[in-house]
Image (cartoon, rainbow, N blue to C red; front, side):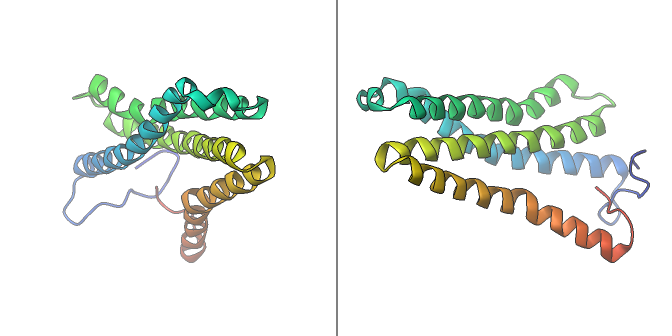
Length: 171
């Protein structure tokens, strides 16, 4: 039970509190692995981009978009790798539940940086291939879809669950 959340955590039948935390940490680390792979591919692309011949044709907007995509990609990578690094340092301590909650928050921040990096990279490519207006439209569409699927839908689900229960849902 969390002091900020008066409801007990949901456990599987016959699952102890320690087993629940272990399971939730394994689930979270698996989810972060998926995100980490995606951002590493994007980040690798961004790292080699300046060394390509046509990169010199990118205008001032393109250079700014590149910088935003690169920086947010690096920050997303840091966020997605942090829980595994902290797990290594805190392995076999009594801090596993703290680590789980922190990893969840860091993972959410990483998703925001990933969304910014993806939208900026899309804007950079579309700006070079088509024009500024198309870059804004397509990168905005990517960002809006990510915001809807990654954040708003789950938040709406939590709100509906809270309304159905008449109280705050467990985390």
